Image (cartoon, rainbow over all chains, first blue to last red; front, side):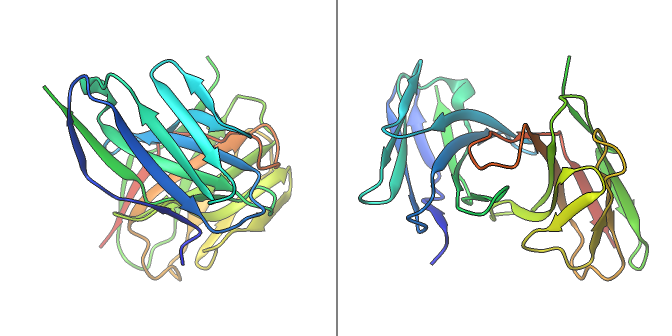
Length: 110
Length: 114
């Protein structure tokens, strides 16, 4: 079983739609979680950190469910510019070691 | 503006040649990392360093070497011993080594070995 698993998609949604991605992690001792977005052939960029019960930043909401070992990302009112690959990241118990999921592809169309 | 720079953006080499990828950061971050990304896969950690003149192997260090002679610089050498060197290489840095610190990435170097 992979340490971090994501549905690769692709998710194709119209502008204005709400879309949610889930990500599961296998290391129950993981303490920190992040969502990154990666545009085609570019570097990953930090979207948001997810601590304790999750957090919200504008149209983006991240939730953490420790009991079921998953985190989610909700995007409301999707924009064309949200089209990207979204990477789920888990910080385990080893210093400096972040584990990246393979990414979920999102395409927002007019 | 602070940031991480990697050069070159694209690199082409013949099989059997060593090649060194540059990574420079002026964020005053203590920790720095090298990852590779292959199509359809997550990022995999090659090497990381917390302080000058010290570094640790990541999950896929075989065929790679690094140095950390100064805080700002963390070059990666892809040696001829690396069996599948063609990949997208990403350098990252963070304030410290704790997993709670966010990592920030440079623009990456696409290496093609033929």
